[in-house]
Length: 389
Image (cartoon, rainbow, N blue to C red; front, top):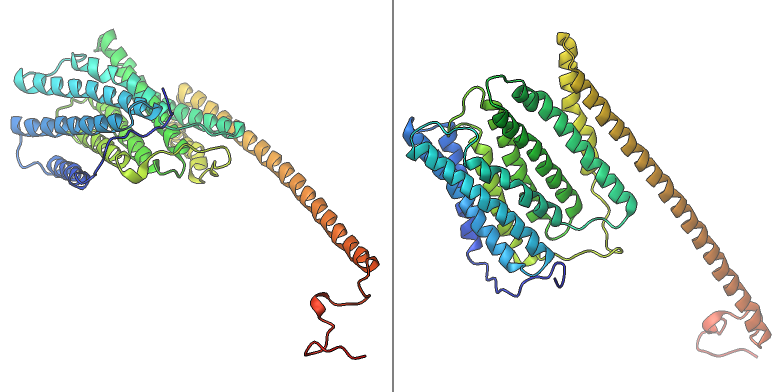
C-alpha cells in the first residue's frame, strides 16, 4: 500500500477552507436557534429540522471525501475512506427518514428502511476510527491504554443497560425485532465512543491531534443523540426535538475535523520510538471519572431501597478493572524507578572513570618534562612575558 501515512500530491491551495468553516458554524448556529426557539410549528418545523440534518450530513460527507482523496494510497486515506462510507450510509438513512416523514405524511415505522443505513454505518465508522492513529511503542503503555478503554467502555455499557437497554427489553408493547434494533443502537454507540476515546488518547500532541479530537467529539455527540432518541421513543419522538442538536452538532464537528485534516500544516508524521511523547495527564483520570455516574445510580437505588443487582455487578466489575489498572501503573512506575537508578549508577561510574583519567594525565605531563607547579597557558609568566633570572 506504500507509505503508511503518505500524503497525496494533490495541490491544496486551501483558500476555500475559511468559507467552509463559516458555513459549518452558520448551519450549527442556525439549527441551535431554530430548535431552542422555533418560529413556527407543525409540518413547516419538521421540514426545516429535516433540512438541517440532511444538509449537515451531506456537507460532512463531501468534506470527508476530499480528505480521503488527499491521503489516497495510504493507511490514513483508507481510514478516511471508511469514515466516508459510514457517512454515505448515514446520508441514505437521514434522507430516507425525511422522505418517509414528510412525503408519506405518516409516522415513520420502527424499524424502517432508514435503519439499514443507521445500523450499517457503525461497522465502517468503527474500523475507520480504530485505523486512524498509531499504537504506542511501549508494551506497558499499550496495556494501560487497553485497560483504560475497557474501563470506559464497561462503564458506558453498565450505564446504557441501567438507563436504556433494560427499559427497552422490558417493554412488552414492542416486537422482538424492534427491541433488538433498539438495544443494538446504544451498544453500538458504546463501541464508537470506545474507538473515539482510543483515538484521542493515541493521537497525543501530533499535528493531526486537532482533526482527531474533532472527529472523536463528532461521533460522541451523535452517540449521545442516538441514546437520547432511544430513550425518547417511549414518550414519542418527532423531528425538531432537542435530540436533533447532537446529530447536527456531530455532523458539523465531522466537517470541521475534515477541514482541519486538509490544513497543509496538519500532515500526519508517524512517530518513531525515540520521538514517542509522554502521555498527557487528563486521560489517566478518565477511568476514575467513569465510575462516578455508576456510583451515583447505585447510591440513588440504595437510598430508595431498590438496588439493581445488574448495576451492582457492573459497578464491582468496573472497580476491579480500575484496581487492575492501578496495579499495572504501579508496576510501570517501579520498573521506571529501577531503570532510573541503574542509569544514575552508570553515569556516576562513568564520571568517576573520567575523573581518574584526568588525574592520571597530570603526573604523566610532569614526568615528560613540564616544571612542577607550572600553571597552564603560561600563567606563571610575569607581565610582559619577561622571566626573571
